[in-house]
Length: 447
Image (cartoon, one colour):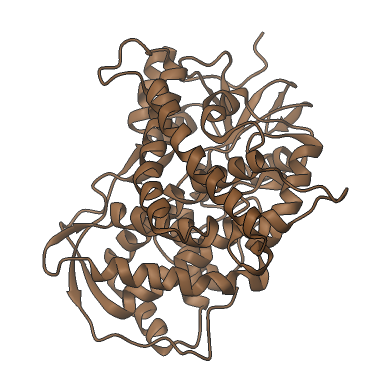
């Protein structure tokens, strides 16, 4: 007898196609027909994935440190990230690297990145054509890539920066193709060559660039005086006084790229789409930005956007011990993930759950495991604070300098892009100039 919740009454191939084309529809269907806990069988995976939306079950899943990563993550990401990536390590090795890396993303450190973020946003905005349709999503991707190159990688050499700007987007695109190839076993049926071979070629070039950057800094010896995240990681020491070697630094840089580029760009594109469909919210936020005194509503807008449009739909674990989830007791070895969208749209947590109402985050703080856009537990996204801070800077800068109008009357629909749920049409807008509202120099954003 099965010890797992039921799956939809269609074959694994159909479940996989449904998930790839309309993931929200699949999750909603399963919740209606099966319940809060259900299983999905994806083609190419050895066992079902159990999805759950109950915050109590999610708390139990995320607070048990012995649970591991589903093996698919390592297989899919290892060719890009490398074996020392904090995303792929487990146990004591993972915790040691997490402790080492966290200080670079918290507290006063965030202040040192604000000027870079604002300058990158201003430069991107200045390139936008006026009174013409413009897709925001690719522009947000270019912006967040620039922030990573400067604030995370700290690249100052013009030629190296140019080559990385060319190759890093290729790496991300080829990585997505390679993951698909590995999972559905279509390596000889793809029409545009072998993504794995192309991925290896691009990865070699990026390795050359990043390892060259690291070697130059070691030779220079002054990296301890710099504030970019690479330099901070080069200076940091583990409890035994050891440091990350060059190959591990490379692995962590690509981890931060993969975790923080597409996700933050997508979150910004969704936030603008939601704001443009809710004029009263946009007007209130613009007034707050112009005043430059409070950030409460800005934070609430970002939290509500991440609730209603979670960028990453799943954040799973493989159980090391059994887990109680509602009526089910899931055995060790089961692959389990929160269905983040379903958790974020529970009426018992969020009245009028499908309404965009940032005020709800001014009234009550969300429960810890009822708002999980960055996952949870010891594997919660390292760069969550960095991402939210960057979103605040970009939103402020755009609203001060431009007026945006939506192109078309319908809100964006969700579409899968790599591992994210992105705006299908890229958040198309028309841009108009606005008299810039200068940011109060004495009141920078709070970290």
